[in-house]
Amino acid sequence: MTNVTSTWTEPSNTATALLLLGRGTDPASERGVDCPGDLPAPSDPDLVARATAAKAALGDRVFVLGHHYQRDEVIQFADVTGDSFKLAQQAAARPDAEFIVFCGVHFMAESADILTKPEQQVILPDLAAGCSMADMAVLGQVETAWERFVDLGIAGDVVPVTYMNSSADIKGFVGRNQGVVCTSSNAKRALTWSFEQGSKVFFLPDQHLGRNTAVLEMGFDLEDCVLYDPHKPGGGLTDDELRDAKMILWRGHCSVHGRFTIDSVREVRERVPGVNVLVHPECRHDVVRAADQVGSTEYIIKALDAAPAGSAWAVGTELNLVRRMALAHPDKQIMFLDRTVCYCSTMNRIDLPHLVWTLEELVAGRVPNVITVDEQTAANARVALDQMLALP
Ligand code: SF4
Image 1 (cartoon, rainbow, N blue to C red):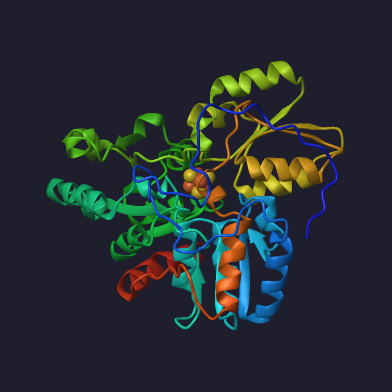
Image 2 (cartoon, protein in one colour):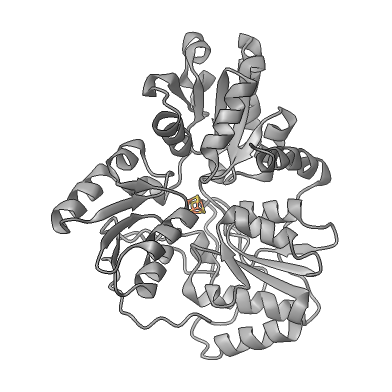
């Protein structure tokens, strides 16, 4: 368990009301899934003891993965913490665990299912824990775009690249079309490899990671990038725009990282002289340009761990992680880049009541919320994932 002793001041709250976690269904939300079980009350004072007892009873049969953006109350029960790719690799490295309880979001559990043995079961404690970015690229929309490339005669020049934060369907599409998966750590290597295979890249689903990598790390111009909007006829692009483009970016973004603005950067620089602005590459292009450093979640953690005592950091990533880093490093001034609360609402769906319910169900011999990717999709997705692992 992690003990933190420092203090943390929550940024002021927004007027946005969230569904009470695990209680009720919002049909207008990305998944609108209700929990099928009888959840313990969040106020139950025995939740920690119940989770501890259930996990101990399961022993090596269960392996709990915790994404860096998860709540502290959940992270304390994780056998390993990490970003989405590290967690999928960790799941694959535990072939003896019968159950992989994935405290993260849906696409991560899918990746773990693809990479683990068929007899292992991957469980997502709350099925409503989706990812709004992953949900912005639906297979039918992507196939429609690809058909347009075929009609235009450019499909043979286009290499599809999908960010890890995408559904198994999209990874499968990319595998079927000789493309590659990338993470925020290896996006440059993935693009370099892709431009050796073809003259254009079709980047899914995060426009910002695609644009930031192409322009800031690969030397492309902004004019080399076009934005394909699946909600507009033909993606909102002319034939010539598609023919001339080097990077065809899907119009998707992270609703958390997309909130940081250039004004957030200016404001913190005025308020905290000498502050270092450190952001994730899922942030908008102008924000990344204005920052001092940009890097993946793992990069951000290492940079803050290595920072000298007394240094000041404004961090543009998910608030659970920034808060945890601030508490772990009381000798450094670590703050959230924006003044507004910016938790990932779907990551936060996984709370202690859902984890307790999941573990106790397993103890009782019932396996809830299993995430399964069909064999054909998994085989195609594995091609794109293996290509990523083989990147030079
Ligand atoms: S932080 Fe963004 S990319 Fe990550 S799960 Fe939440 S919405 Fe998806």
